[in-house]
Amino acid sequence: MITLHHLEKSQSIRILWLLEELEVPYEVKLYDRDPKTRLAPAAYKAVSPLGTAPVITEGEVTLAETNAIVDYICDGHDTGRLRPAPGTAERADYLFWFHASQGSFQPLLTNFFVLKAMTMRAPFLVRGVAKGMVDGLDKAFFGPRLAAMLKEIERTLAQRAWFAGDRLTAADIVMGYSMEVAAHRGGMDEANFPNAHRWLKQMHETPSYQRALEKDGKGTILL
Image (tube, rainbow, N blue to C red; front, side):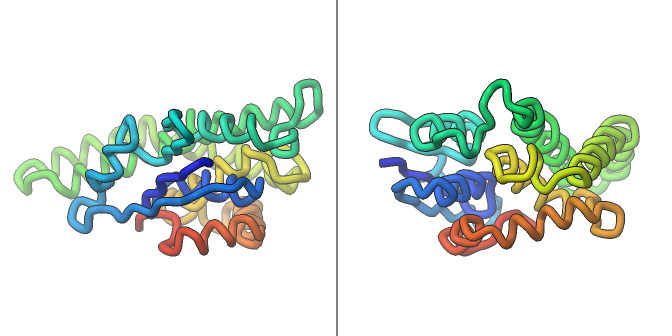
């Protein structure tokens, strides 16, 4: 049986959602973050090869990385419902958004927030310099790339109900966490991105996602 080692307020909510959507028998072990550092506790790092979330175990298998875990679970439990088959009209869009989630979107969000946090924690005497460097990176790199990504998300969701077409796929599941982060802290406001927020509402109303939140019990993102 699959065991999801679920770190609170982390990207492993995606795997919890996937398991609920596919109705896969599984166990979930919950881990609280360190109250001071907000990082994963030692018990979690002892399981995860990288000390990051998500991670699953099944027998002798220990597997980290969101998309690797999604493919592993779908290989064993999905009949093609969540992964459009090669040659179908939805396949290219599915592949793009499935990999853009972790290859482009989430790294942009994470790296920028880490740099912001470093600025706040920098010694007072160098804080101004650190802020100037972070602001420069945002203007030259992070800001334009994130803006382009949000624009493409809004354009895509203006044309279809879900990221790869008219039905939920694994691309939506892996995009979910990043969409929540972008809406809360990444500038994806409802006034300028109405279709993105329509998608978020649709996700929130999905029964399998609601069940995942009940199992989680602590929300999805660090604020």
